[in-house]
Length: 245
Ligand code: ADP
Ligand code: MG
Image 1: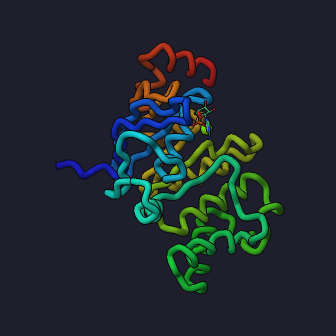
Image 2: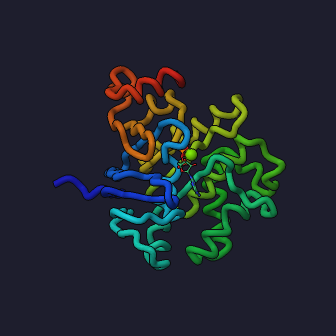
Image 3: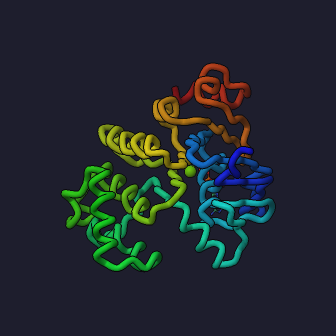
């Protein structure tokens, strides 16, 4: 009997009234699986992963995260979020807090860790992301690539079972993309369940178990990367690939 998927999405529908933004989206993600989500701008990728983190409500369908069905109650949202780390395109670090304070805030206030323990955990994560030497700096003193690695470390300090990434390298200067992707590859190799919205197809080839292609609010294709890149089935996916590869 295969394990229950850690993320279960069944015929999810969402409207930004009157715009139908997610159309009958169904998706199962197994624990430890790495998914890359791609598709044209405006196809609903961000909206989908924001629903998984309960940052956006939905109107129809079912969404379960680590066995918790997301309804609109604050309690289930809080419980589900404990399992989910999120990394955004624009880092979203707190500008008035130092790097290590960025990493200890939620563990202290959400998980109730004592400050010493939270700091220890933060330093461990910052070391893994090779940014511990910047612990007492402020976000504005770091490069974009460094800030994004801090954002990853900060999310990991809550010890999530799932990490969501929304175009984590799109806002970076080209020379900084590699350091962030390397950190994400290492995280994938550690066994983390990951859903990554990205157009970095090298990353997809290297680590993804599956590539999910979205267009106009729907999942059009879902295939292993080799198959997807060589034999995308839909005309829309082939067109998309011809523009980005
Ligand atoms: P993607 O991440 O694939 O570029 P998004 O999920 O951001 O797509 O957006 C999907 C569609 O929903 C786009 O047409 C976008 O303009 C629209 N949209 C996104 N956020 C909102 C919002 N808060 N209110 C209204 N429309 C929105
Ligand atoms: Mg987006």
